Amino acid sequence: MKLVKSMVVGLAFVAGTASAGVYTSVEVSNEEARATGDTNVKYGVVVGVKDKSGMDYSIKVDSSQAKIGDGSLSNGAEVRAKKTFTGISVYDVKPYVGVRVGHKIKADTDFSHYAVDYGIKFPIIGKIVHLDIGGRYRNAFDTDNTMKSNRAHALVSWNLTKQDTVGVRYSQAYGDVSEEKNAWRLSYTRSF
Image (cartoon, rainbow, N blue to C red; front, side):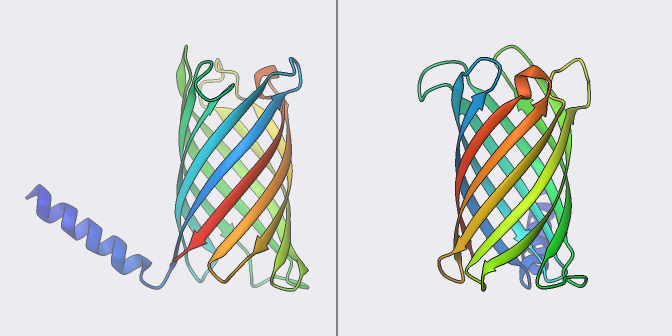
């Protein structure tokens, strides 16, 4: 019976995504804590689905460490939903808003968190190069965990082909001391 239910759920997912765009992204970031000057490397993988109405549903997993093989690991996972508003676009400027729910596992604790994203994306060079300017508010559900922050970012993305995109993002986060970071992120996205 479990196999039948799993197959029905799998078929429903495939049918639902048949007219949607499936994608996957890999990310690598260099983050610097402003209070201490300490840096860490963060890796992430995203798998998602975009539909024609501007909805984007994705799952992200990530891991960070001071150096590969050195220092304590921090791991996380998020479920995300984002809406890009294409119908109100002027000069191809597209505002968006998103929500996330995730779980973070650190060496000494683990906790759940939420976030709200917002911003605008617009072309710089035709359909090849875009700029995304936005922000994020994030906090733990249990505020005893220090994760409260506001982050601003600027992302430049290049469409190498219709299916391949490379992006470079700079961000600054403010809030709880442990979350005050400057970060550079390089990402590659493949659409199917």
